[in-house]
Image (cartoon, rainbow, N blue to C red; front, side):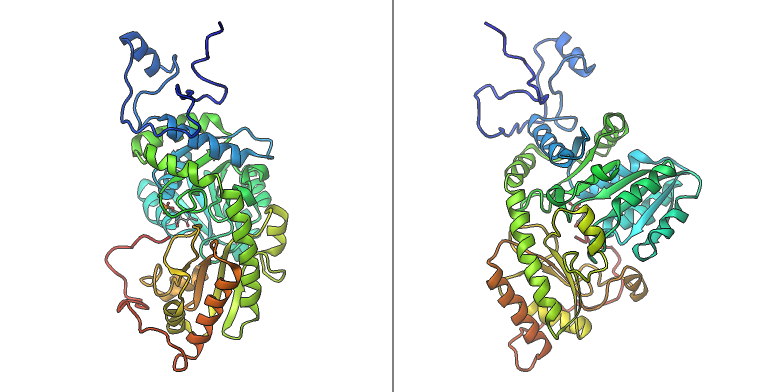
Length: 425
Ligand code: PLP
């Protein structure tokens, strides 16, 4: 009888019991049958695992799943490494690409944690960073990469929280011509709607805390790349030394969550498109950013590179910070929360929440106005959701007529800088 191969075609060990679902290998370490086997595994000459920070079967299954999703239809055969958070993934990816004396170009806006890494952490290690505003593309990017030793271009599209869109094919060709790698944060779009590898991106990063997990139960991150040398070399080294790895249980939850990714993203995008259209008509709304609206500045590029427009909406409520706070308090179905990409609709108001500590000039430079509201549309019925959001808008714009609760946060709206920057999602 033919012997069962120890490692099946996807490179992962088969479950000896034929379990339908990937088991949770909740173990920190793995045993060896002999000293010779241990030596061979450490040398990478025999398959198998040694220690969960280095690798774990449940985590490896999750990595293989994300790599397959990001590779689909791109002609690239990518692999992935999972991290303990999106910031773990972004940090490891950036550190894998740069050395002291190198130059990085960051297309703004980017997620606050990524901005902090690039502007406050990397310079401490002799890496210079130039920010280019998305409004100054494409020329601004072409000029910025001319600086010697440009090794990395970082973009996020759609961007958090403004929903700005970056032309991926253009960014990839500019980075390539300069001898730099392009790293794309694909958290908002997900591989269901956008596969940056197909446009020439070298690295794709995710906060899998968001849509990939999808249920608000896990903090995680992942880096995907077809550059196997980078992945197996410097990126894997960063994973090992930073130690930002997911637990096997988190990988299991992510594997469960990602099963419904396509269904969730399609349904949520459909609801978001409807809601964005309603918001655009509303008198209490100053502006709406949703790449699916035909007059959105990013619509044309998004139509070229995305397979749908996603479930994130940003809009400006008339009346600034106070109106934003009243709107939040008047919501009944939507949840007031940071994070995004979850089955529940989550609403955040950067000026009174995540970005309240930033000086006005910094907010303005990042395109974050006092009235900016970010909605991550969930799986609720579109009608119910619209009733909640539009009703809250009415109550926020006519506070005396409405029943908005008083503000619950005495610090809300404050622009005083706290001693520590809080997590911003
Ligand atoms: N990238 C984007 C676009 C994000 O929105 C976030 C968090 O909100 C991150 C990265 C960081 O992810 P995490 O919170 O999982 O570290």
